[in-house]
Amino acid sequence: MFKNLKLWACTSLSALLVFVAVGGGAQVCCPILIYQPEPPKK
Amino acid sequence: MNYLAKRLAGFLADNSSRSVHTDELRYGIEIVLGALLQIILVAIAAVLAGILKETITVMLTAFLYRRYTGGVHCEKYYRCTVSTIFTLLIIGKAAAMFTIDYMWVSMTLVLLLSLYLIFTVVPVDNPVLTIDDPMQRRKMKTGAMTVLLTMLTVSSLLIIKFQLNSFGTAILLGLFWQDITLFRPGIIYIHAWDKLFGTLEHLLERR
Image 1 (spheres, rainbow over the protein chains, first blue to last red):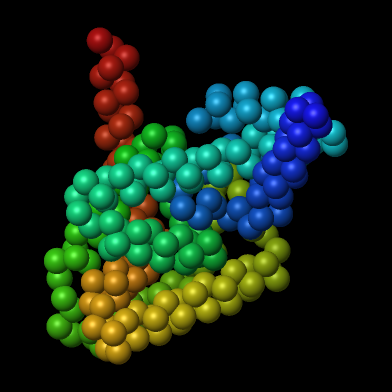
Image 2 (image 1 turned 90 degrees about the vertical axis):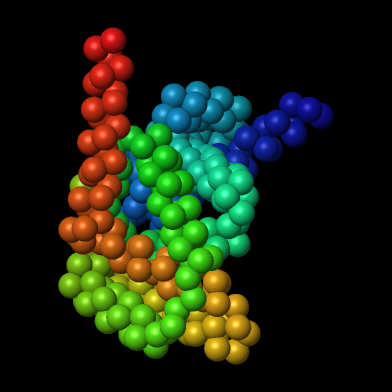
């Protein structure tokens, strides 16, 4: 039960964070931060 | 922040049912966690200074506008955090203290400066992440223009109709601050922070 929940939570969170990274509009710069993290390697 | 993001990305990738690109995850975590931590720190500092409403309004306005305009960046996360807190508190304090006597003049000046910058430099490229697609550049300009006009309308309504001067002023100052980060004065200001911290780091290393 806990294992399934952990799997579901990690998968959903990963999908959301990948969306932020590649499709969420962080292309130009980070909106709040005036710091740009190193972009992901293609 | 980078180390923490790498560790978290590794953990999430290992426990995910789909295969994910760990470096993309790391980047997403750095953006989300970095922004959350900064919002919390800015909010704490603003509460302590007694200017929470104004500072948050300035931050949200600059955030919305920066989403489309781009702007100058600091070299390291902690430098960005310290300079952001310092700058937003000063602007928040200014919004709380001053009432704009010549509101239409101030609004017109911000509008003209913003329009000039939108037509000439927006979106301001990031050295590590440039936008080459003309279509996307046009989209960013249109987005910046929409945010600018919406925020100016909201600001004037808040001041004229609801007499919420500090909120209206905070929006105006948020737009102005974000404009500054798009050209030379902002670049000089942010690089001065980078230089200051670079010197401090150098001194600490020598000790």
